[in-house]
Length: 341
Ligand code: TXA
Ligand code: MG
Image (cartoon, rainbow, N blue to C red; front, side):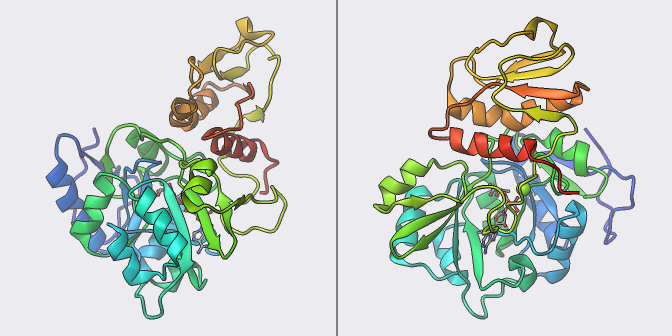
């Protein structure tokens, strides 16, 4: 792949492509090189089980600033801080008993807990956008090992330009940010494919800030508390990043489609057919066997493929709203929402 070598300078000259290292064939090199780049205060694209993250030292204001600049992300939108394990997380955030139970049950995994930040924790206010809470998550697999090797929490939003579709392969990252960062670690396609579920524990309920890779019923079952869902797009933004329009493809999205116009792209679920599909530009099935986990894993890649086909519209057939379907429908609705800018 790209063979631009790290040059030791502080910034990547524009036009240089990021170097890409496979964690499958060169795991130790990936960790060593990533720690070196992170230590210079620069972000690295890292695979997690949900989506690829653009990771940088959560205690270093210059490093965090580079994340916001690289993504073009609004600074009122706080970043999730990734930890190696629960013990590390407890150094930075205050855990109530229910949050600890959820952490023990679902970490490492696609759950982000919003918790009070410990005073003097060292996490820089730029990472939390000045809030007195912090979104904390322990990712599975390689990313956890990298954090352990680096020794500091990693602030990591999804590794895409702000407002665009999140990346689930190294290729997605290179196509979008490859000219703006030094290093992409390639872990293959992400297993879960949608971002983590974000919750805040309150005395008598869990407040769902973003549906994601852990289904809501699993949280209810593990906590014994009811989950209160967000009031919907247009309501006050509780997870500041939950702008109504997000994950925006260039094509217009048509949800709950029953027919499709010639030349448009179709994304279907479980083999459902629609009127006019024979004249579609492209037909993709999120999961022919109707499996919502498989559909989540394919979602962003298929949205990107449908968009790249040049179709003016992307029609999507209904996806059941149970289990991971809730996160899938959330992302589809945001992709279809009127653009804010
Ligand atoms: O799966 C994931 O969570 C991925 C991978 C890379 O770990 N990360 C991710 O980050 O999706 P990002 O930045 O795209 O989304 C973070 C969300 C935003 O909606 C942000 O507003 C919310 O988390 N968030 C972060 N800290 C928060 C806090 N203290 N209170 C409320 N919401 C918070
Ligand atoms: Mg994102």
